[in-house]
Image (tube, rainbow, N blue to C red):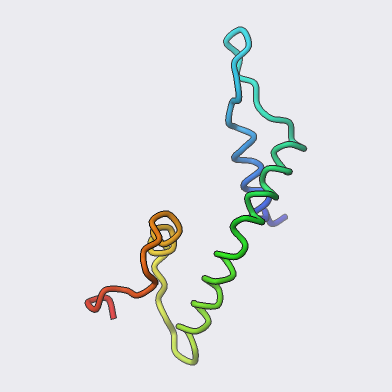
Length: 88
């Protein structure tokens, strides 16, 4: 069975303790984790779609290398899409 992005986010959220009771970590319910993961994915969808379109534009008929770290940097620091000249 393939794990979807929703599954991966929900699983990651399920490990995060929200409080401790008598020294035992308490985590969110599965339903809450799935609901939070769905909200996170809906917020990320426009950026993911933009990146898919950008990749399709870059790829065209020729193979293109895409640096995964660049996508993370773009999302976190709003760095322009253009790579420095020495990467071309």
